[in-house]
Image 1 (spheres, helix red, strand yellow):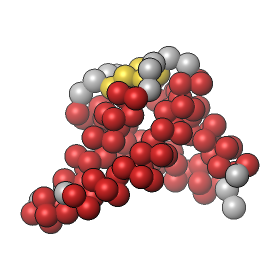
Image 2: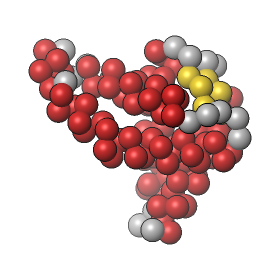
Image 3: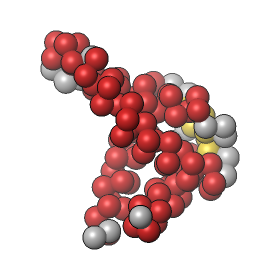
Length: 112
């Protein structure tokens, strides 16, 4: 549990710093970044698998590219749910999703 909290805070800090690299998004405070990390974690755990199941035929037809659209949809849902976190544009959300997965991989490699 303590590892998850440390990972959440580190990921939240990275989310807070991402608008410096990416135009088209804003994160108000470090607390908002941590909340975004928590909400993204919850959405990726519960909502994204359901979306993958529902969209399985479309994902097969597009040879897996529709899963990128699902990642962007999850980012937009998070933007809708968290005040102080805004994403403008499809490609900004897509790049944010890529950067977040890379950040989670880096932060996760230091754990365990």
